[in-house]
Image: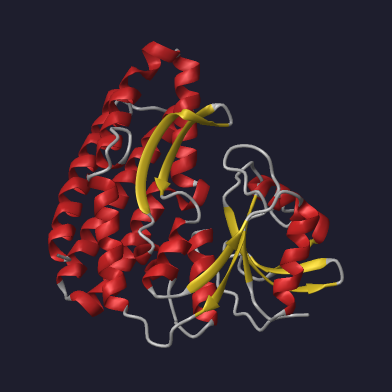
Length: 332
C-alpha cells in the first residue's frame, strides 16, 4: 500500500513535514511559509534542562507547535495522538494509512537505521511523514533526505518510543479536514505577531531577546566558573544546537528571512527590507558559531575570546530586538 505523496526535501524536519502534509491536500505551502505562519522562530537558554548532560539551548519553538499553529491558522482540523506502548501505536499507524491518509510522526533520530552513522545522535524531536507500507517496511518521506526512505517496522517502533529528554511517546498526527480557500494574509500576520511576542514579551529572562543577553552574560563566566575543559564542552554543545540540531540558530533566521520575502507578496514591499535585516542577523549568528568552533578546535585567535563572543551575542540581541519591534508595528 502506497499513498501518492510528493516527497520534498527541506532544511528542517517539522517545517518540511508540515508543508508536505498541507500541500498534499491542495494548499501549496513552502517550508519557509510553514515556519513563519507556525511562528517557529524562538530562542531559549534553559540550563536546568540537560541534553547529553549539558544545558539545552533552543533556537525554535518546541516540536509540534509549528504544525499546530499552521493548521489552526489555515482552518485545518487535525488528529494528534500519543500512546503507552509500541504495539498499539504501530497498529494505529497502520489503520490510518489504510484509509489513504499520510501520517506525521515524531521520532528519536538515533533509532532510524537509514541515517548515516555520522549523523545519528540522540534527538527525540525528529519529524517525518509515513506514506505507505510494504510487508513490514514503512515508506517514509523524511524531509532532511533528498529521496524517500524505507524503514523496518521494528526500527520505526523503537524510534517512536525512544527514551530520554522530550521522548516522543509514539506521537502521530494527520489532517482530517482542509478548507479550500484559507485566509493566507491573516495567517502570515498572526505568525509574525506570535514570533514577535515570543521574542520580546516572554515573561522569563532566559527566553527571547532577554535570553540571548542572559546567555551572553553566562558565557563570559564559563571559563572561570567551570574550568577551561568544561567551558569548551558547554560551548561545543551550544554551537552544536545552533548549527546542527534542527537547522540551528542561523539557519532558522535564514528560513524566517525567506518567509518574510514571501510575505512581501501579501503584505507589501517593506517586508523585503525586513527579510534583508533578518538575513544579516543570521550572518551574525554564523560569525558567533565560527569563533566558537575555533575555540573548540584549539585555534582561537585574539578576537575569539569568550568576552568577544559574548559581545557578538549582545549585538545580535540588539539587532533582533529592533527588528521584532518594527515587524510588530508593521502587522498591527
